[in-house]
Length: 235
Image 1 (tube, rainbow, N blue to C red):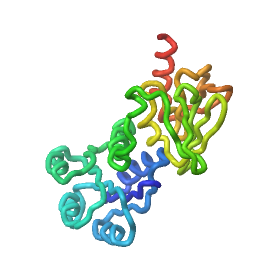
Image 2 (cartoon, rainbow, N blue to C red; image 1 turned 45 degrees about the horizontal axis):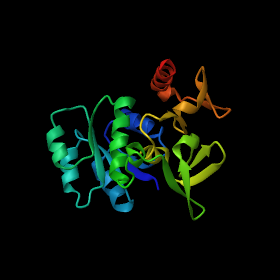
Image 3 (tube, rainbow, N blue to C red; image 1 turned 90 degrees about the vertical axis):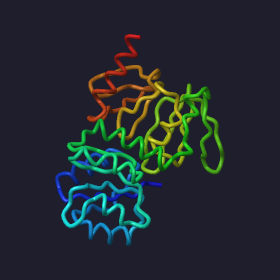
Image 4 (cartoon, rainbow, N blue to C red; image 1 turned 90 degrees about the horizontal axis):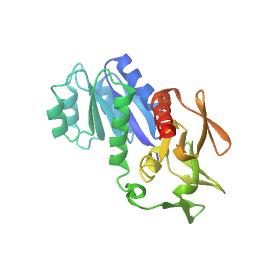
């Protein structure tokens, strides 16, 4: 299930930045954008919005006042050029407080907080000693050993887990599965791919080879991914 999202900001350029960042993840469905809180209120009444990115300094009504006016507000991330509203914002139980300009690196932390909020049941069991997970495939629960996983591919609302001997398709997303994978053993290299670092056999240009298949490294992942891969090779 995707997180149905609304962006509320009176600056089209600011909306564009959030929209662009969100577009790099498969976990969100951008239902609407709004430059007017009145219009946003109508959207909230007519759509089942799970998450709202909300600017503070807008005409007609302050973003925080708008949030306070909602009887059943969705989960909210504040996006603003002003730092001084942070304390008041967190008193309203917002998930995060983003100060413009919003970099993609900072946005990644917000996505992590959002997923912790919406998927609290997906704990870090894999990082705490377990060496396998059970996944649901065709109404059966199948054990998959972490050591056998080559890479994981996003298929919209599903993922394909590619192992040494088989492939498994299950209803999940890359951010969600990351919460149960062993820490520092897997690396997201693309909006569609997470790979086992130890299974990488070659790095060439903006591609890696895993299990005999070449996988692309996404533009927004290149710097960090290559740094981790090359560090691992030195070790």
